[in-house]
Length: 150
Image (cartoon, rainbow, N blue to C red; front, side, top):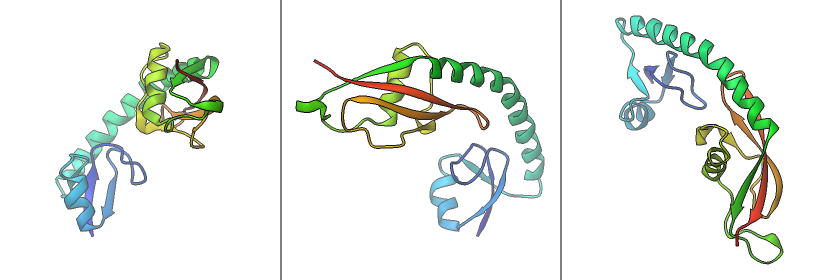
């Protein structure tokens, strides 16, 4: 097992500044080469404190912005155009990146595609909802209207 300090949030593992123990292969082949983590050392504990302090400052400032964006996302219906065949069946499926593009096109700000959660596979036209995690404490519900493009 390898002991690491996370430099970024890793879904299912922890947030920036957390000290975690993971298997050696996961650390060596994924986390360390991508810069998601640093190896833990006694001197690294000082880095943990500075990372946590910076994260706390960013979170407090971003909480208000996230709440405002969540209100804007929930209030407006986002229209997403997709190629569809007979009876509204889509050619393919709607992905989180499609939702991000539609939100940005609607002028509702930028959203990270990793924070978009689609509760069902969207394979036909109609009305759907998607959950967007904007902050640790703020999740917005986006109302999607899938329409056939011509």
